View 1: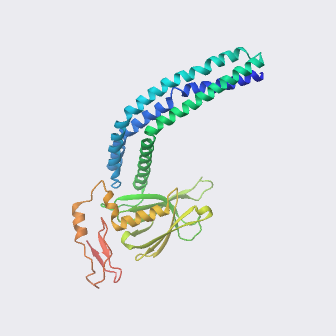
View 2: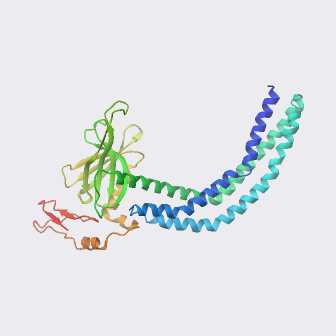
View 3: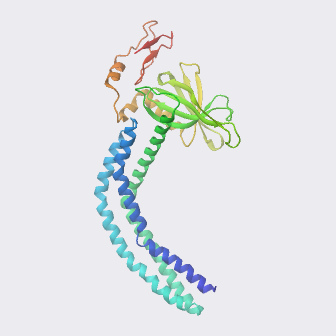
Length: 343
């Protein structure tokens, strides 16, 4: 193949791609996807409520606000889209005639190069015009598009949390609501291969680590599934949580728990799978302080709330101050004399 023919083929390929993109079909698809996502969001939120996820009440609010925002700007987006496509129609036509003439002159290198240069300039202008048109359209809806996708990402995360909850080997309390879950490792020996991997849960009553992994075998063949509750603590038993990023480039997100009750008073957990230890620390402290109750979309049982209000604050045996009661807790243990008070 001659050099003029190769250059022509390259220019024709660029032009074909640009001409196809000049219809702004990619923007049209994004607008349709955004419309569908906004319309389907209320059902997506309802699906996690039906499965018992009680928190992040703002999801319902976001679904409503997204719908209102889209109703306000959708007409503008569609009008602007039609205008941009019409404007690009003239720009798309310009390189076509130049390419047709250039193809006829592939045997005349001098004439061909002159026509090819003009065709290339016209294609450059076309690509720039398409890019500018996309930018103008994206300015109208890309913020909303990004916010909607972020919300769907949250919902996907919540669905995974619910999947883990439903697969758990232990029972959650009747009034116990799971807020977070993450892949994690319970650091017992400091030797990764020996320490259990599994799922860390944060509920309105407890922090729980469940071993959930396959061990043994060769390259996974013949391995045995190990799944059991490995460690748990009441939220009221947590004195402090410290975090540290260890390892190369700080890639190991460590959490250090100091507890006032239980067999283990110092517990180390590494959260994995993209979970952030600082985020977890903040959410656990919010749960302990009761601030997460403001995020409830499913209200707790009124009888339980009444029991919390009437819970004793001092031990009737030794007089010591009792730990703060959290939602769904059925008993309190005095940290001084060990007396268990049932609510």
